Amino acid sequence: MSAAEPVDLTVADLHPALGDPALTSMNFLNEVSERYPAAVSLAAGRPYEEYFDLAAVHRHLDTFHRHLVDDLGHRPEQARRLLLQYGRTKGIVHHLIARNLAVDEGITVDPEDVVVTVGCQEAMFLVLRALRAGPMDVLLAVAPTYVGLTGAARLVDLPVWPVVGGSSGVDLADLAAQARRARAAGLRPRACYLMPDFANPSGVSIDTAHRRRLLDLAVEEDLLLLEDNPYGLFHLDDGPRPPTLKALDTGRRVVYLGSFAKTVLPGARVGYVVADQRVAGADGRVGPLADQLAMIKSMVTVNTSPIAQAVIGGRLLEHGCSLVAANIRERAAYTRNLRHLVAGLTRRFPAVPDRPAAVRWTVPAGGFFVVVTVPFPVDDALLDRSARDYGVLWTPMAHFYDDTAPVRALRLSVSAVTPEQIDVGLDRLAELITDELARRAG
Ligand SMILES: Cc1ncc(COP(=O)(O)O)c(C=O)c1O
Image (cartoon, rainbow, N blue to C red; front, side, top):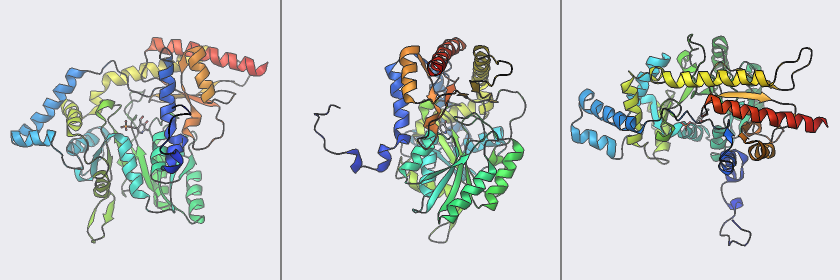
């Protein structure tokens, strides 16, 4: 837009979130990658595209259609209507999601407590919209946190209070302290948002004992836990995965947020929320929080595209409702890439005996992300220079903190690249870091 262009509105007259860095962050990062299409992207958290298969999408749709007729006994015209007409607000693959959670996670869920959403992003929005009852409400969130959560909170005017993540994934003393501090200020902490498995962006996971302590603390502090789990299936080791918080939740403390973006297809835009908390309605009737979320959803997206749901449903059915079984190739690719990236960092930044390492990185047990810490601030200007002069993209960690303090770290993602691209990207990143260290030393 040029300065001379006539203006009808200013952003100051629109919702305050529209000027907020949480909302502009994703656009900024997309714009940088569009401006430098030749740069190797270790920034994108998109899933691996090699296995995308258009023919499979048609097959999934047919599989789900057959399921409606053969398994659920719908007449052909009913099945056609279910797929092509406006539909049930809470969705049409809720029973398969419940089955998937039982098969893969050992979670027992009443399908009526599930709302199928337009991606996990809508699920987060619905939950935050419901929980933000008034100006006294605040959300606690483990920092650094997913920017989509911060942005959704902004849109519903819900302040986000950071909780220290640290190496355990959530610092329980800080969580308790923040909850009490909020209450002492006359505020109402409604919930704590976190990703117990291979968090975005930190890559950190919470161990099982700590998960149990977290659930106990949630009871003591009367908090809900919003568990977001898009990466949990992509663990490096073949041993058992730790149980999800929801699997350990005996007191309906956990609202579970699910995404099919990484385990089926991001383009389907299907996610879900399990919200089994009992809510007493104005009429005294008790129902699941899911019903209240569906009420909000009916005014936001009406219902999640049944065609998109059918694609997800078909993929689930073709694998006995197990996303573990459906993602064997994908998990192998992410495992290979993550190991390759960590080994590549070790080779390019070898440890020097008796000298503290200038460059350090996390070694996650799975997921898509590695955080590299450097001895200088990492900001958007450096990213721009990295893309332009060195041909490599990554994400400044500052984007995942809800303040303007400088951050000396960047996030690398292994999900959308080949090992060869990782090599090229790391060579370029090493050159940038070496030049930056020399520039600052001199
Ligand atoms: C932690 C986390 N939650 C939610 C989402 C969004 O998921 P969806 O694409 O299903 O909206 C992402 C996407 O990257 C994510 O990293």
